[in-house]
Length: 452
Ligand SMILES: Cc1cc2nc3c(=O)[nH]c(=O)nc-3n(C[C@H](O)[C@H](O)[C@H](O)COP(=O)(O)OP(=O)(O)OC[C@H]3O[C@@H](n4cnc5c(N)ncnc54)[C@H](O)[C@@H]3O)c2cc1C
Image 1 (cartoon, rainbow, N blue to C red):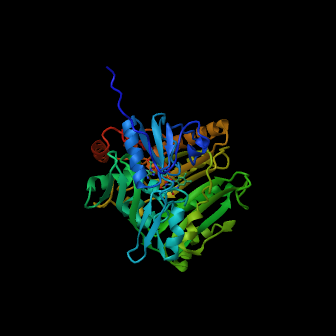
Image 2 (cartoon, helix red, strand yellow):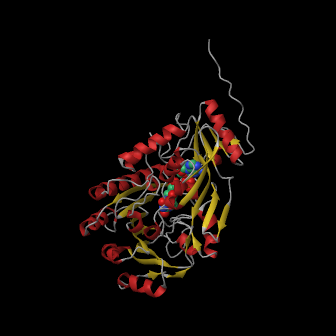
Image 3 (cartoon, rainbow, N blue to C red):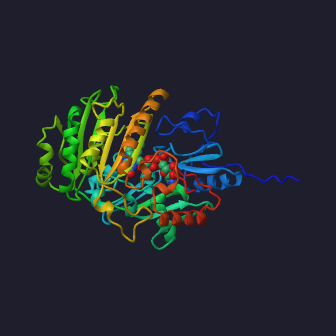
């Protein structure tokens, strides 16, 4: 006798879009336009109760649930054939408690929803290089931003997480309640449930001395070597990026960047202009073609890194790197610099160290970031053959940098499959697996970086 389990209809106040529906293509679209997501359905729950309904329905129907907001890191998601993508877009809301310097966001909130309001109050969150990612997705993966060398990873400023678990229950995890789950969520990503709200501390930051020094790209060799030599002189109050860029000639790229190529140094200094000028003097002495450094409110650094403001098709590569010798910079430029023929849009090295290298017992699963530099490379992918050429070039860069690898990868910058052992030491990975087995034993939740 075949027993047919009764699967109730999925009833939500928010929309559920299925293959063949009129808005199917827009519902399943990720931020990275090169990703072709083909889930069983896309649900847009209206509120926390709706989230629980989707989770319970998926369980009963033998489907998985992939929480998603923007789809910025959709590439590593495996097959979605038996998965409902649960888009948190409707769970909007940002509350700032200025007196206690903390914030609560619901899961739809992007950093761009919080940064300007906090900035007006002389406060800042530990956001990254774009305001367009969700606070929740970014923070669950770690959160490496402009304040990182002074204040560490965003995940380690979190004070509470609310989530709908595999049982369809709304749970609050913090240092006192569900402490092991609270630990796992801070770095372990979307493996444990659908996060509906996040609470975290803000930093007091009235102004930054921040900007970009643009040099002609032919000077990449001189600029990146000078930047590397400058780094040991910088205090934790500075977080900087050494970078080479080839801007495409697209109309939405602003002048004077459009179609131009640069070597550049971006930096944010959490201090006054006089000290900032003094600290920056060795790089300024090189004579940049454009110098945008100024004292600005925290909101002004949200766009400093010039990330695309709208969804784009792209391919990326990343590594965390240890010490880089002058020879390592030479090798990087030989494969990605002016004489290399590289088509890559951007090749950057972010300065790590400082608070990122300091462990603390109250930290979550992502305690620190290994290494001295985070490498991130990007190529555009408007057509398959261009994507393939950029991917090949990214492979060459990754190979060149392999001897300098710090031994761990950073999940937010990783857009490939490969399991969590890339990100964590054995003890941390085992502890994450134990939490996953405890809260989601049937593997209902499908994260971009799955706990396997
Ligand atoms: C242009 C660009 C710039 C970036 N800059 C930085 C940077 O400076 N620093 C940095 O650290 N990272 C950066 N990132 C990486 C970014 O932080 C990650 O891609 C992050 O995962 C994006 O989160 P999202 O929710 O917007 O994306 P999504 O792709 O929607 O989510 C990514 C994953 O997060 C999890 N997730 C999201 N929402 C929820 C939820 N409500 N509940 C449970 N799980 C959830 C899921 O596992 C999901 O697969 C950047 C990415 C891009 C494309």
